[in-house]
Image 1 (cartoon, one colour):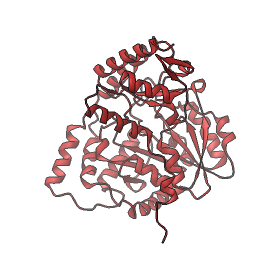
Image 2 (cartoon, helix red, strand yellow):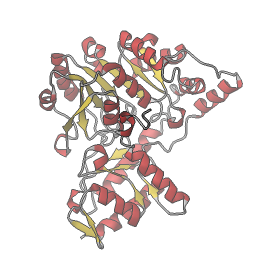
Image 3 (cartoon, helix red, strand yellow):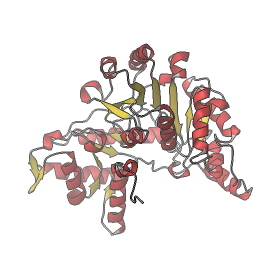
Image 4 (cartoon, one colour):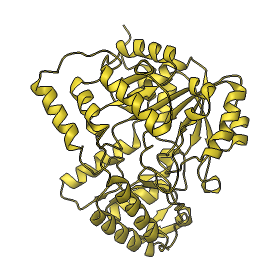
Length: 395
């Protein structure tokens, strides 16, 4: 008998962001004064109405299995939200509720991809995307971007990446890690390439309510043909501060949703019944102070960083991240510690300055690093003071 793990599992790389967060939390538990700017989790509380709805669900013994795609009340309300927020027409039958947006993404890749299919993946990208693609036995085809294009792919780049094996384009706007948001004109140009070559789009819009100074537009809004070829992914973790409740959803063409519902029925079945009730209540009660506060924090961090040596930074238009370029530190040293790349940079900041952040290598962006400003103003000020002091000693 053969023993051991499958090649599928052995080949999975652990999530760098979760690894860094775990190490940071252990340091804090050990009494080290670390400022954690690594985690992609809002520091706001879950809306009170959502917590109350969860408690009521427990008191009412709403603790049994639900329909696999989610309770119909929640799916109807999600459809209404997508109409009001994005101008998209869906019904409850076009919605599949899952155990978080990450689960929805996994469902999408598993349902759409065959072995050898190619998924076009703009970089920088969220750390889990390439691993999910490979779990579906597809191949990520990376399009590299940088500050020169605002960390967004161009239609020319997309056209060059298309092959007969292309099955899916993965779009993430607003972006994790860069905060980039595609404009309507930019999406329209990409839509023409998509329609020409007839592949699917998985559009991860989990940060769609966290935008600043720009309009959020969904690729699914560019006509019925694009809508039919798009799986829109969203959830409650970011805009509603419900990361631990694990509720996400996808919206798409009905036959696709039906197929993915069948797939989900054999993996997790329905999302947690209590969490669904909480999400239903949350949709009408987002914290209206969140966006202004995140905008203030973004502006504060940008103002501080742009006064520091060795760093440059684009202005992000969404999410709660900034993505500075630290390549000017490469070949230099902090005291006697050499800095060769973003991994060295991030490691030294954690060890020497007690700031936790994520190196750009985790996102296929070796010249950058990610700062999450989803923390208090006090923590941001402390972190920026430490970062400035660190950079002043980089020679």
